[in-house]
Length: 566
Image (cartoon, rainbow, N blue to C red; front, side, top):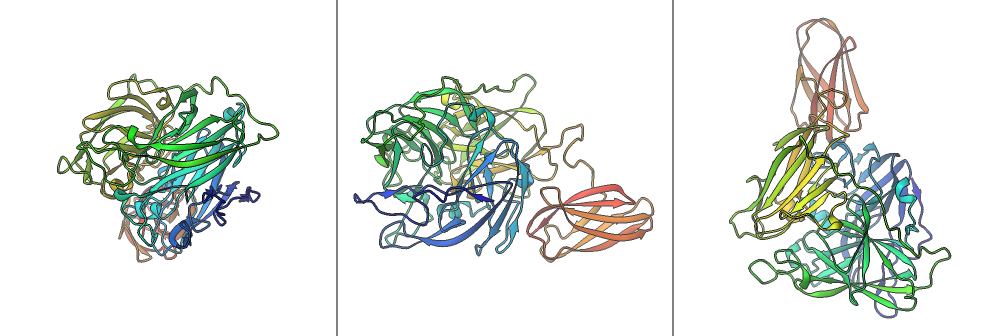
């Protein structure tokens, strides 16, 4: 682990108030390297002067460090849970195996450590990490558990783009939140009454008079932002959720749903000494998009359907070697062929039909024990999503990127044609068609998630899960049929009972593997006869999560089963 940004003037630990009452936006410190330690912990933070707010953070009291990773590197995380509750960490947008994804199935108990390890297979872009325990995601994220992930690669590094972290390459997480009279965070995302940027209200950032990249993340639990400058200054979007766009897209408004990210370039050359105001234009949100007006009219929170300031930018002198121009082309996104692709349909509904809180996918609520569908590694799929509710829903799919083929039957706008992992499905019979392909991982036991990224909807069950079976060639994943059974499963007692029928005599051994495929415990039962065996495995002291238990007879693999340790 390497801490790279101690030189930064602003940090999450020190938020000095300026002479004008605005607060300098803190820049998160950076972690990088092959081994990264994260500690999720409860703390307190002064967000409003004179008040101490209870919060959650990674490696601190509120929010977390920015993790910088290089495409192709191997990384191991050690996530230490110092909360009094269970949690998970989801690497939002990263292409990882289901066992490393941090889903609701990979629980980290209080006081325990989770150590996933995986290669970075992603394109240069802005990703993020946050908790994902079922039924608890909104609370932990609202209290502050979230942080940036920046992936760099050779293609992006060859472009003339701003990339001096914290100077002309600035990560900015914008979050609607609800505070009560004592400035405590309220778990009611329908009544959001404040907006924070990097954890501060009424924030100000100093940026040099040159090309500046702002990495925008909507880390809210519920509402959409409609970003734009008060003077309607144009800017260019260069990246969407999971990679560069083909070319910079000029715009004056940018809508981001919860979970979405966008890198924008703002030309501040010639602006030295000026002050710019970044706003959210809630009055410009389409009807049915949280943060604007509801389909039947009216609003839920005090900031809905209003235009308000979210960030002040003071333009200072240019740096020694400023970026003063922008490439005309960035990359070449190649969409998978639709020929021969399998198709599936997802439908969003509400009960009753006009409900704004009770949502279903294909008529179902999430059930951790139910696999909603299966697919196969390497198979191209087209998903047709329809939304019959009165609210727009941002759909997030885990473990892979996708491309949006159409929105309401039309070609998506240019800034939505890059690699995505969140897509907004418009309300009132709105539709989205997307294409995806899970090429790198197959796992017959552990599912990926898909869900609405409005966190109260997700916690309320607007989520499903699917299995990507290993490729038919059998080159990856676990395809064998188990030849033994285990009980109880899930197990919380530290003792696992195994019933196995041996086809022949031989030396019987078991290996327990974690999500990264590492053997965490071995069991040698010596020579056994060819008959039924009832065995007991001591698994006390294991961290909660999902494991694979392999059986071998005289070195020959008999089978494997999934074991859930609670």
